Length: 121
Image (cartoon, rainbow, N blue to C red; front, side):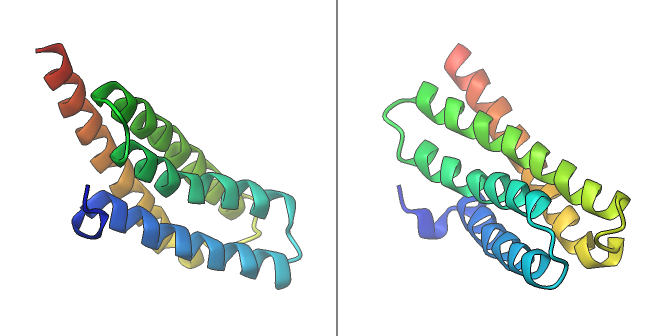
């Protein structure tokens, strides 16, 4: 599949880059290593699983990988919210990331719903 033209792949790839940059900031400027590492792992895993799903061998494989991406997106949202709630970051610093992850979650939810309906019909 041509990933260059795939909306969710592009969105999650660009999101991963932003998460990597936030990880660098949290580590260097805030000296926050544990939460930063958790965020890095799940935030970059979204796109990695999307890529695996797009390259999957079957529709069930696609659904399984996209389901993992959705779970990782939810976890990423949690860590971002926790960083704000614990005053490590200001909401203004992560508003754009939170908006992006909400959009990614909506897109993934829609893709999974449609894919499951197609496989059941």
